[in-house]
Amino acid sequence: MKLENLKHKTWQWQRSYTQTNALRSDDRIALFGVVMVYSASAMLAQSEHHGHFYYVIKQAIWTAIGLVAMLAAMQFDYNRLRDRRIVYGLLLLTVFMLLAVFAFFAYQRCAALDQV
Image (cartoon, rainbow, N blue to C red):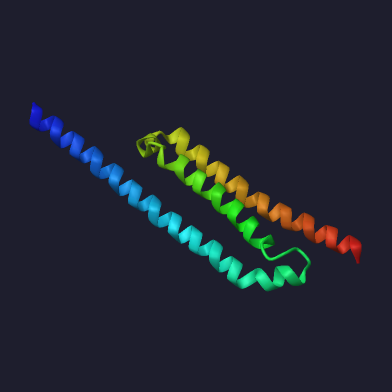
């Protein structure tokens, strides 16, 4: 009985350790991306009278939102995806969002044609 508890605790530690390392590597890649955005856009942002950090701040905000979404997704139990209602609900949500992108670009194009 004690051996089974030890195996269970070891497995939990390994899972937690793996998730922690994955989170660390994702954080590093995301921060590297923010630095690359600064490197590529500092002069452009300065020439557009926004200041050096205009695009970096925007990138950092979206990076933070992405990391929070990743932390929320890590808490999701993927075994719940066996329920067809959840799978088809997510599928319909994805299709709706893809169609919304086309509607947004069509609206932008019509607005641009009205200005001409």
